[in-house]
Length: 264
Image (cartoon, rainbow, N blue to C red; front, top):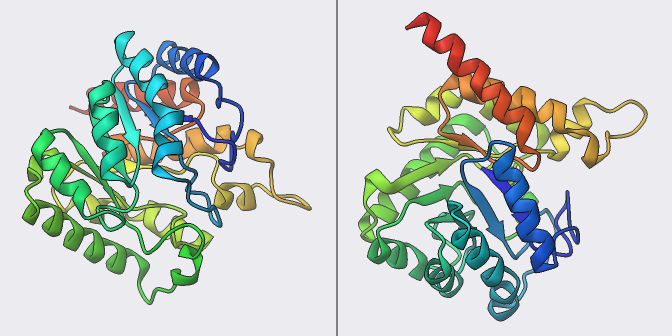
């Protein structure tokens, strides 16, 4: 899953793809590099980010989604709002990626149910401006798994087909570095929920901290570490990884798949 942030303030590439033509060109480059799915978002969810209006979010992403879908790309919309998701689906999006797992807007699971599209449900404990206040766990793996399991039950109760749900443990969302590493080490616990798993570690601060010398590694210099996480996620059986730079991760997935074929 290749990331296209049509935002001025995303942590990794804020402002780089705010122009429609540049965002579309970037999306097509991600496809050529091996992306299977393009995730287009118009609202930053980095720690501390403020929300934007629904109108602004849609203004940013709708033309990008329409052009990429018209070019034949499989597009997901990264949004917490039912109104945005509905317009994005009309524009050609085929997947809804909701970092709130249906909690920010209870109408979103109902919309997904009516549309019959795949729905990415992430572990979430609050909006970006306060989520790190909730990074408190006695057993992060068990608690995140149990909370995701409850979200799965709740979106299914809202009408979403369980077979259409993808789960995401939400690395970096109400998680400190040590929490992220624990979750990555136990992806099998999430796969036991019986649904495909999306892993989003790309360029995140816990990688920067790991690679730090006297200071954290710059965001733009974390893609090798991201590819290493891709290998681990692929070996664990993840459905997809969400990454900013696609080629190295796509190559890593091919290597893991080839070795898996050798063992079969």
